[in-house]
Image 1 (tube, rainbow, N blue to C red):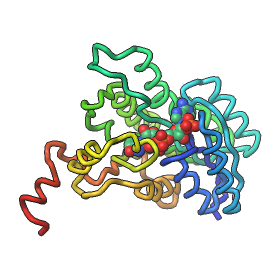
Image 2 (cartoon, protein in one colour):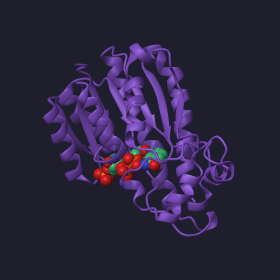
Image 3 (tube, rainbow, N blue to C red):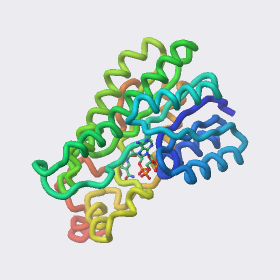
Length: 268
Ligand code: NAP
């Protein structure tokens, strides 16, 4: 039993839900944040309670500072302290048509709020509480492979910029709060099959696969062990401000079509 208090944002499904349940399975208590999907959050919460840990759901838009403050008040009222924060909430939302010149500025603002501001707001409250209670905690930011490579086809300008900003926030915050014994690190997943990726058609999925040297799409179990590792000071106590890309090799050379290469070279 680890018995730590862990808050995971965007945990009503997908990677966040898998992270919440992975912490619950090792005996940590979990706060499950969601924005709209109350039913999904409730299901994750019930499953965590079924495992035997304390679990609660918290509705808040992480891009809204007031709502984040209310969420933290409620979390702290219930759990008293926070040991681990996972800033997972994020995503591409509905990408508008057209090039950069057609991008609505409201879309830019929404995306930066969700994918960058949210992590800064949540981390601010978490670090204050950890400091007050002398907790040498951990913050783990869920970034994206698109923080290091572009994704021009789908015109995710603000998403890529926000996630790259999140990597730098991980470094700058990381080297600051380590004086309090708090470690900040990030994980940048490549293609991970979740509800967010069901929007892609077969042609798009094939195009993704062609770029991944590992020859398969990722799944949530490719991410959760690293989250647990980075949250555990006995295992990762000397790792500070790093972003770990977990993408089956996708970001190493984006110019190669690995399926074509395999056809040309044969399987050996
Ligand atoms: P997902 O299945 O769409 O889940 C997103 C989660 O975020 C949901 O629980 C959603 O809850 C929550 N959320 C969305 N907006 C929110 C807001 N404003 N405030 C609070 N919660 C909010 O997405 P996912 O694929 O698991 O992605 C999780 C994280 O991994 C994201 O940061 C994403 O950018 C990153 N990532 C994913 C992939 C991938 O291939 N799947 C690749 C790279 C990076 P509600 O529906 O209740 O709002």
